[in-house]
Length: 387
Image 1 (cartoon, rainbow, N blue to C red):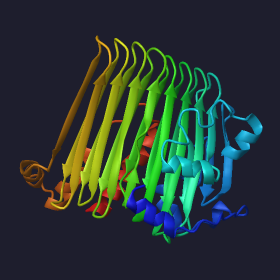
Image 2: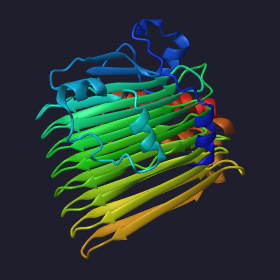
Image 3: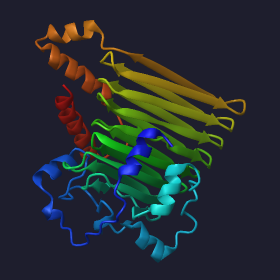
């Protein structure tokens, strides 16, 4: 086990806090502002469902669309059994964190879109820590049934009084034949948090999985490496990652895609900026069938001599007649770019800010316009703080 997480686990309080009478209206303005920076709107506007877990309690869960359901994972297991999904995409013996979640799991969410349903507005789920020095271990299952379309935005955050803690999140995604699932995750953790998501995705024939991960606020130790397995012909997986590592942050992230059938496609793209923290940007593409296409792109911007960006692209071809490529680049802001913008009336700080925002702004296809606006607003707010 890595030392940072081990030390935190020794310090964390293990009691399970139950607060079933918690009212969303009791959340302070400070907390609401914090949650908005994770894409979570407590008003529920432009949402068709909402799941909120505070520490170890489910405090709000509601679906507003007949074509989808969202509920506590324990309730879903009691109702449906879920034997064909529970720990089927991911093994509880994968590492110490999956084992921990299997032994200590407290809730998590279950989200499913029904066959052929088109869920235009996203469902939102929030995993929130309000207490300092506690561990949150959740297990989530998401299913996009055949021919359906589902958008989810997940915000993971620590409250203003939280400085340290451990979040272990197990997530299993099942994208059935011809379905499309877009999953956007925004992290807003405390400066001393250790974060360990463990994610696996199974994508069937003609199905599409799109992942967008954004972390622009401090996190002491983040480690995640989701794996998507493209099981059917013409299956598609896309991973977009945007990271800002400030001094003291350590972010080890990436994605692996296994292309098992003819016509499968994958793209793994990361945009990273270090203002003093460490970023390890990984990517691994495995082509197992002829006719597959995949691309890996890692670009990093290093803005501090104390920062570090390590790009690790891997391509693994296991058959002939495939097309896989990668591109990796790490550098600093070009002086001429700053001078160009300053010559047009911007200060050096404004010019630098504009360049950083443009670098981190990925053109993510398939997102609802409302969600795109929220992400753009988030980038603007975080950019002000970073500068």
